[in-house]
Length: 236
Image (cartoon, rainbow, N blue to C red; front, side, top):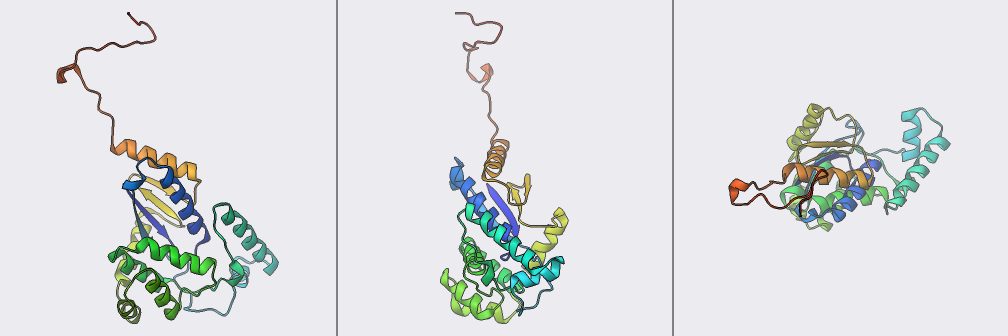
């Protein structure tokens, strides 16, 4: 079973949704057969590589709220994330452009460590206050999950995987995705937003049943009628 996920590494609900999905997969009887594929989505593709503004100040300007209101929003998000085992420190978050981070996630996919890099980038941004738009920071994080330092440097210095990032974003537009996280389970069931673990688990089970329908053997296959009870009769 394949799960395609569109998300951004600086999206708090994407990190929460990731944890909830992971919890559902752990409870899913066929969790070992689940493949997760991460797809690029930039919440702010026009963001500068770096910003002098802290997260709360940037939010206040973007959403037209006071600085105190923005900080309260971050505090509330931090509390929600904690319920799913995540430790946010949004006061240290350093907003910036995520295009190069997404390019490295595609490199990681080609080397079999996509999930590890996705997790590392999100933890670095939300908990450690790392600037995930800074090339030195990106290189350090990428190498920490097993990517080759030289290869990472070459990707960051050029345009490798830019087309893959754009293709992901175009696919999201084709699907009508306007916000993330956005999950597509087994190519059949779309789940928008960071739903509860129970919702994810139920969807996984529905998708599995859809892909693996029960076949009832008929007498023509060598069975007799068999003994059966119904509401109307049960002959002994």
